[in-house]
Length: 332
Image (cartoon, rainbow, N blue to C red; front, side):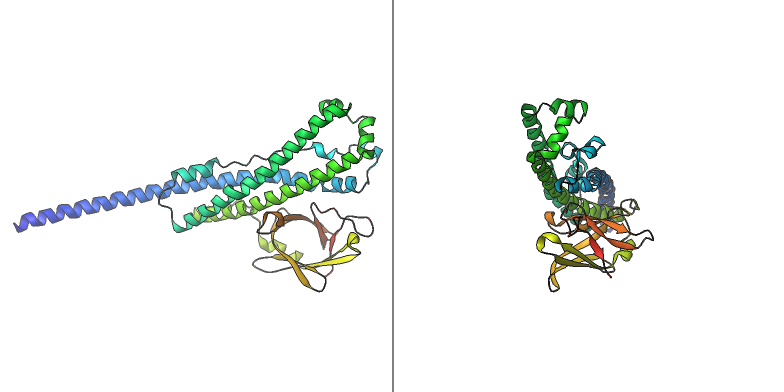
């Protein structure tokens, strides 16, 4: 009887061990599957960031042209020599979420860290992507409506859109018709809002990419992930004078170590706004806020010796007292 009981106990123990081994194997398979799914999501994040950067690069390049048109600093010869027709240039982004949806469908037994990242991904694709897509659809609809309107009203429309020819009649329209200035103003405002939404998406997407790569123990792409320590030379105090506000002087400061921040002040040192600063490229910064409309970009202006001279904010086209674009000049 003792021998029989011992045999039964050994069999039960064997079964329990086998079950535990199966569970370990299932956990290992789930963990490996989750790693593959998160790797795919990280690749998709990079793809979306690169799509966004194509549009942001256009907005950066076009900024001087919008300033000249809206402040009537363009003439006939400028258009004949290649000055762009601004509302015509439009490129769609293609933000995708297929790999994120596969993660939702295929995930099993996520760790606490993976659950946290997944929650942030839900916010990214469930709110921030939807906002960027909505902005883009509204811009596309605006372009379509304007194109249809022009087909009925202007004889130069076929030459412009069919042959890319700037006829004298078309240039006259650009220089004298108030509706063109209205169009440029409208599309600039729409693009500026779209830029803020894309920066809102991009910044969180890049943070999530870094988190995922760290989780799966892989190195991040250094062309995307730039060292915050590279911003040390930007620290200091900046000022800008706003002619349209009776010469009001705005003041801001860049400071911080682990996190570099931008603090804007009005009047008697009253803090007006605060942003986190992230490098976009060697010459452009992203100013990130938690709300969609609190996200901006600025070009870094340097002297011939590499010394920082100031910041030129993308999309802000106000003039200073000399009729030039407002620059935040570094004063100390």
